[in-house]
Image 1 (spheres, rainbow, N blue to C red):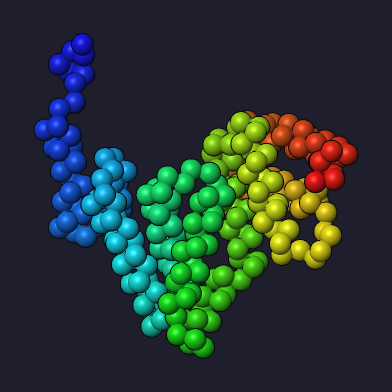
Image 2 (cartoon, rainbow, N blue to C red; image 1 turned 120 degrees about the horizontal axis):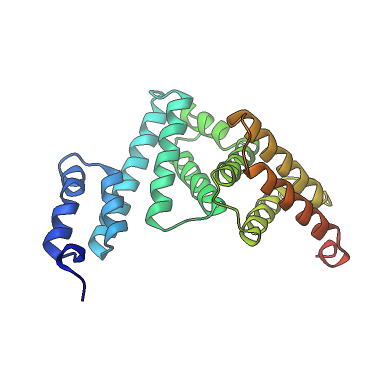
Amino acid sequence: MLPPSARTTPRMTAISALPLLLKAHLLGSVSARVALDARRSSPSRCCNAISAITNARQKLATQVGNGSLTPDRFQERAARLAELHSTLYNHTTPMQRAQAAETMLCNIRNLQRHGSDGARFMDQQCHPEQVLARGRDTLATAFWAGQLNQARLFNEQILLLAKREQAYCPTGYPRAAIVQSIFNHLQQFNHAHARDFNPQAAILKHFRQDLTASLASPTLKGR
């Protein structure tokens, strides 16, 4: 039996959730609604969180349509909404989060009037170059934060990204070349954000050697 100090009663849980409840219901905080559902999921809280994200997305789309947001401010807010969506649906891998971000942007683009300034702005945000850059940056951020230090998970994520990028390449473009380009981006990302020695660099070098060797094997070449 747990000692009194280690027990959590329903009353204690309610008290600890009070700040979130106040933010969610009095201030209309989307992040608070998502956090409440993540702490103790229930159908009503989940619906509230989904509605809050949907309403925030609609508001963001409206602001895009009237041109009241700078590109940087838009990207910041869209990324935040995509992050909340990923939290709500328990998206934990970089490629899941990257896909959530692209889905969010596509939904906002679909809410723009055809031929409007907002539609043109969103076409720029959803341009293939932007999509690929965001995917690579999402992978790089997770790796240098130490979230992909298991070789199996790392290889799975980098190959998923390579497959995604291959859809934008000419037919027959070698997957191995795309993978090497992604590795180059990972290295450059580190130089840009962490110039001092980072032990992750040694892990990246090891992963690169192993995956390159695997891709060169006749078994994987034929896949």
